[in-house]
Length: 390
Ligand SMILES: Cc1cc2nc3c(=O)[nH]c(=O)nc-3n(C[C@H](O)[C@H](O)[C@H](O)COP(=O)(O)OP(=O)(O)OC[C@H]3O[C@@H](n4cnc5c(N)ncnc54)[C@H](O)[C@@H]3O)c2cc1C
Image (tube, rainbow, N blue to C red; front, top):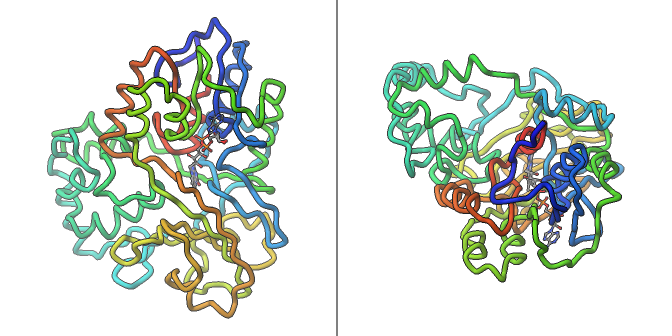
């Protein structure tokens, strides 16, 4: 079966391919090439595979450096079965909450009157979407206040950026088909094709996923590599490292450097006591008005109880380095703190704004290299798996 083009730019699959970067993107590309019998070498700069995905196994349970979970899809299920991995599924029925107007509110965090207004606005048309932010695209439906207080926290939980800074079509790819049509057409189609969002991980954390994938392609991997860019390369690093690799191509270097990024810090707080307000909750999302730096809190012991956490484990995602005093709710549990571990990613996530869409189009026209990563189509691990599936 011909291989689907999951990268941007040009690659000749009849010749040896050089993959740069052994994070999840590079590993997934390598695994696909191996299955198709394509000759390749994977060059990884550091001494380990996995990139940002890494798990520390501590006496208080697994602690993730970055992603906590991958969302289920048929392609993810197929890959995990090929890798002979048995995932654990997040507890069903946990409440997903938003901190709004000083209170924890579960979904939908809207008053009866607000729900009525939104329902009425479902018949309004989706505005023109070219260069339109997510907030601009949804203000006619939700109002500016609900965009800031509800839409922003949902998307901040994934992209670490408010709805005003995200491009509507970059974060909701199918939306442009519905431009000019009533919002309800878009939502009806979403509901028809909806599959339940089930988060999966592993007893030993996301490292198990990396280890299984690495085992499949290890013989083709060159660790501690500083090999300069070769002909017929697939660059699977973050955009700034990609720009560095392509220093001798000023146009591509400039394009890659123009991609903005958001720094992210992932902190795990182990507490002796349970945060009673978060009992039965998956987590809690914050809007930028109520917490500028904190994106959200995940209750690890509630999400994956199969891991038998000996104490109460919470992951906080933030824009800057934090301690317990900086986190709403957690600050009340200072005397209960057993341990805090923080992992910082100065190049955390690419900013999914309208510039990124322009850059993607230009990168796809390049003849000298090809690119695949969390800035070429989607941030999520699920989508990276889907793109590299046959
Ligand atoms: C805190 C955090 C939480 C997240 N949570 C989730 C989640 O729950 N679910 C989800 O789906 N996604 C999540 N994501 C997103 C997801 O983790 C990332 O999109 C994904 O891990 C990126 O993988 P990557 O391989 O593209 O890049 P990276 O992991 O950055 O890997 C790039 C690799 O390239 C190597 N490299 C760099 N330069 C060179 C060079 N010159 N030569 C060779 N190698 C080089 C690096 O050493 C690295 O190993 C999260 C991200 C963060 C930061």
